[in-house]
Image 1 (tube, rainbow, N blue to C red):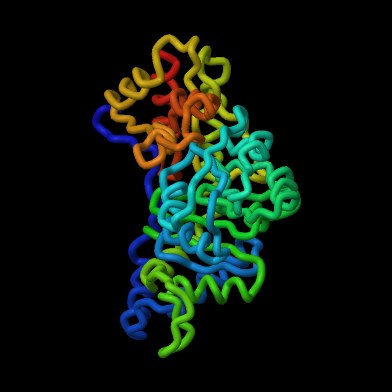
Image 2 (cartoon, one colour):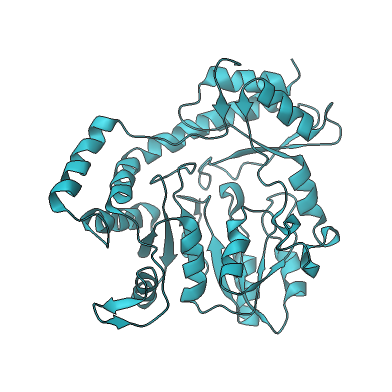
Length: 369
């Protein structure tokens, strides 16, 4: 495997010849952005696929997170997880909001509902959980807490495209959910994102905020931002959507091969699979336990030496970085489960183009052979 570099993920790209007609339509229409026909088509098709009523496309998931907080006029303090990509907490700072970090559940690595209530203060206005690795949060418990204390809930659902519960799409929960369509995601538009909401009035406000706050040519009602998705990205999304079920099925096969090959390997813990109904197989994290023969970082380097570029998602914790570490809630003593997971995790390569023979080689390296 030293001749071929294998990365944790690679974007799924449609054949170029299939994309050419879309480019021709964009060229002929001369509509490059500002809610053009492909943008409108993709919003409609994603609503159908995801089983949601209202969806607003964005240029990326981070701008979508920032705008979601503005949409609900969130202020003060927001309870969130330290175990995520930095954009989760950064979106709060961009809005002048104080993140309050709460520890995670050891089994799911999602925000632990049992720790939320103790972190609520008179300044708390919302909860910002993450469906980590595409595994759903305990939405029922979080909803109960939010209702009890009058808090808003915005889900960072960057990993949760197409994820379902028995009651339907996980994106139906919370006041808003935010998706990322970055090139590394299960469904991608190169760069992109979306906010899912539950009523037309909220969608109107979201669409205004992502277009500088404009209502019409001469009326601006809010200090919005330029968060619009271009026609080029929307066209790519429409193409990607045609093959998304096949791509998820191919990821499932790889996930199952990893699970079988790493079963009973001493010192290697695979996160329990949420089951076919809810998983989109967006990531394959393993946790390297103290009884594994070498350290997590030594295994990480060993794989890199073999041309396998896995990732330590999420290391270090968000709470470790200088803009957060001075906060009381960022203390490692407040986040023991998150700290342990961050020190143990490696996300293995998983994407449709990954060959099963390559998966076997990765397994053999982890098994120490």
